[in-house]
Image 1 (tube, helix red, strand yellow):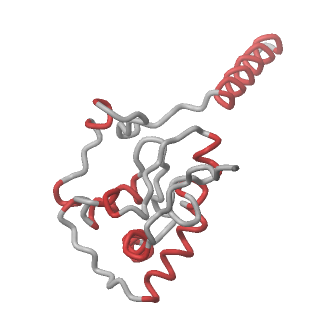
Image 2: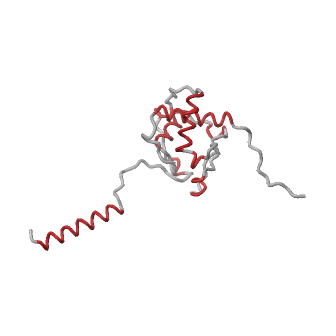
Image 3: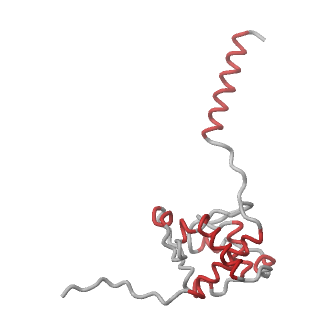
Length: 162
């Protein structure tokens, strides 16, 4: 191969590699809409996931384990106490449900919570393989405990100066 062709081929290869590094190909991902409303309706949890029972009893040990993992992976958005006011949620201007409010989990099965934690939803990234299934069930138990142990929230009306 002539030297001029080799230089040209090397240059094209380098340019292509640089373009790929800046814009890596994306893999097909399941649709997880980031907005509420009609688009959120497209997020479908399989029936078998909805019906999946939690095999981990909500013991003190399970809840403590779930709290620890929640602190690492969830608190930045959902807040340390589950109130939905984590630093990252504020920075991204996300509206996140208060997990301490029983209504926020009303009608949601443990299987549904497990599925959403494992696979993500909208702006919420997937836990994926970072946690073992029992650890995700521990997080489900912890999240359920937030609503059970939450004290009624006082109104945060500003104090009046008289």
